Length: 307
Figure (cartoon, rainbow, N blue to C red):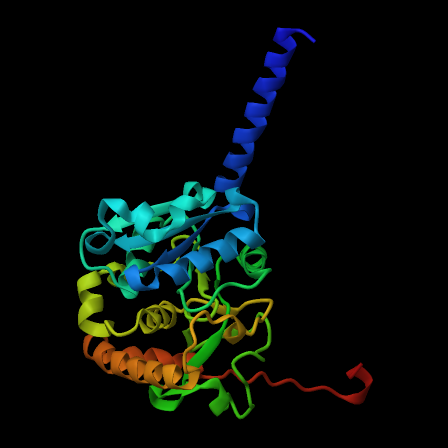
């Protein structure tokens, strides 16, 4: 086997390698999904568990990129050591972004969506590790519904007059628990749940520039970025869809927490965010009420045509 022939094989291999990357990054069916997480010093162990749970279940690294946002004032230049991920080869596959200003879970959504507007964004928190099949589900759902937001779980929705309710309180008269939704159902006026399983947004999803105004966010909804995202989904009349597979993410919660108490506090934060948000966007309840309106389709027939 001649050196020239080996060189030709090498060139072909390199060409196929970069072609694969190009297809993944540019085709609608192969866009690179940005998985966005953030952490502080006290929760970095949880974040590592979640990152490892992603790498352990999905090996096609060209399909996604993990973006980990860290506050510089806590991690500084020694972030590799302080995070503990230097010990793993996974560090090479993580894009770490150190932020000079105070970093919050809420702020990372705006930072990520500004920086990666041309990528689908999958936002997750570090409350629970991610079960096998989780990422594959999101990738397949995004290919099937490339223009819709896909939620792993929905826990709250806007009832009459914008009242925030839980699904176990009843949804249109039916008893929906948080994990027995109908897969792929469209929610017209729900509040996204990032804590349990996260949510995926297509590229360039939010068009309203107010969404990216961090100062406006601080003044109107600084208690919950979940409310902030949900409100703009409703105001922009976007589609929010339940994932095709429904996991019981409560089985994968990392810390030993009182989940009922956690939910109670979360609901209070959502209500507080709503009141602040209405001061800045006083027509928001109109958007909610309009989304709740039902269209009745009336048809008629007679026996000969009934079949």
